[in-house]
Amino acid sequence: MAGIPQVREAGWLYEPDDDYVPAAHVRLEERMDGSGWDLYLADPASGPSQHARYPDEKSARAALARVYAAGRDRGEWKVNRRD
Image (tube, rainbow, N blue to C red; front, side):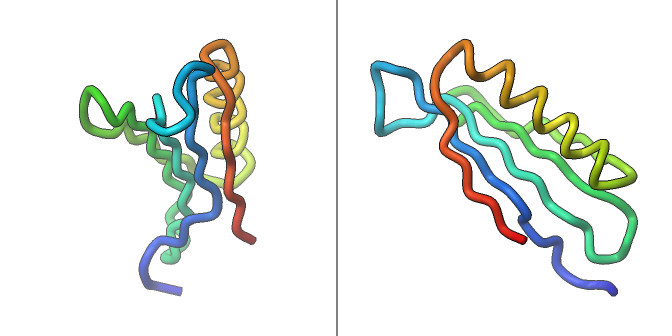
């Protein structure tokens, strides 16, 4: 089905000393044309998003788990999941 990519999960990383300004933002989107999944990672303070495309949900979620694990050294993730 063609259409607008659907956000399936988004997370904001907050450092321990700042509960208001996120240090990073990650977004997982499903492409509705069946061509795969997109993962976007941004540091709001320093610049544009990094983007990676994955052929299936399993590999995209594995990459997302690695991003979350790396961020836990810096602070706490607040995650919003959509099914």
